[in-house]
Length: 501
Image (cartoon, rainbow, N blue to C red; front, side):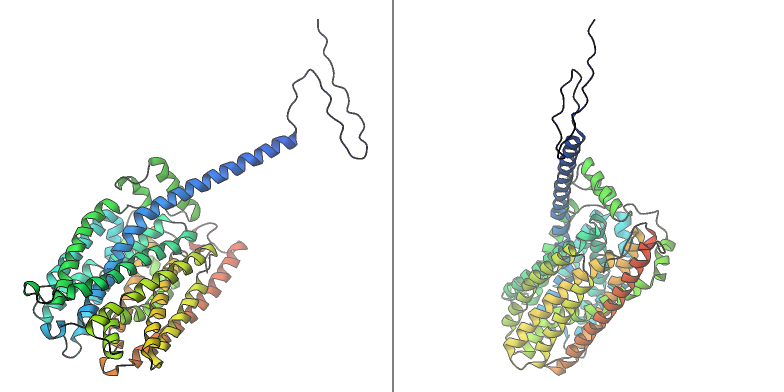
């Protein structure tokens, strides 16, 4: 019979140095130190794999969602681009738009109809789904734009623009809502920047296209401005068909999208949003679930921010060629061409400011910086006598206000939770943004050329208001987060939710 051998006791230690372990006939287990080291390496490897997996998923969402969203969102500015380019051709004489405020009225009725239908149209995106909603409204936009090429009176122009406002009412709030459901709060501003970059790039290219189409003046008996509406309307109809195949549904319905995510990727996408803010799925719809959010004071603060911002957006996007022609002395062709480059430039500040806004999780400071740039740009445009300085001012103003679209949209989506709250906020804010457009359509007064001093002072004042309101928001968000850390307050009805400022 074999005898069991007992392990020898360890030798005494000297100078704190361990003696070598004694061999026995028993199995030697790895030391705790070795086990812990292995465990750390294993965990780090898993974390790196998870990061790569997440990065791959986000890039896949970027490719499918942000690309088409940028093109669709450009419909809002594409319309203003066509109208503004046409405003320096013969459209005023052909339709009688030069009498009184008829041109401003044609802009006004579009905005009013759009504002009126913002909330129901955004809810329709949630209920019908993005694929059906956005493809239909894009084709409708194209059809109405194409029909505008054949109108003969300014009254017909007004009627079509009312219909256009209705069809486009879901574009910006619906897309900003859809994007906010797919990304965590720390990722959103850069994605809104991608949306804005696609938008302004398409609008910039539209300026060059309008320049070329204007040279078809007289071809087939159509004026140059009619060719602008006809060709870009046909392009929009084609984009509507592509939209149905390309755009994606909400995260929980991603399987309805055409060749998008695998079942495992869809689960991972929804898990990310659940961990970030816990509002992947929407409750069954009722008007009460939307109406209750009108009691949140933040809604009205965000509405004021976007109202003030769109004063500048509308005045520049609709009137820039007129300012270049009447205020700076450029010809019709030069005014159309020179209105495009500021939009290309805007891609640079919007991407850079949004990258740092997401990386540093800093929203308010980015908005304030953009406001200062806008104020400086409008000061150059309004108070300088040199054409070159005034034109550079249009670059600075355009880049800054486009950057603030992304920053402000991320600001509000990062500080709310709940699907119907997102839909309500997106629609209400975009409606007030439209009201800013109504005001912006009247502040550029032709009789004040070449300085347009009323538009300059109102634009500067509106951005001072934005800076003041962001300061108030930041103080409140800081205080609320402090209360949340002390366990005295639950923010947005969600555990561990903190405001971003």
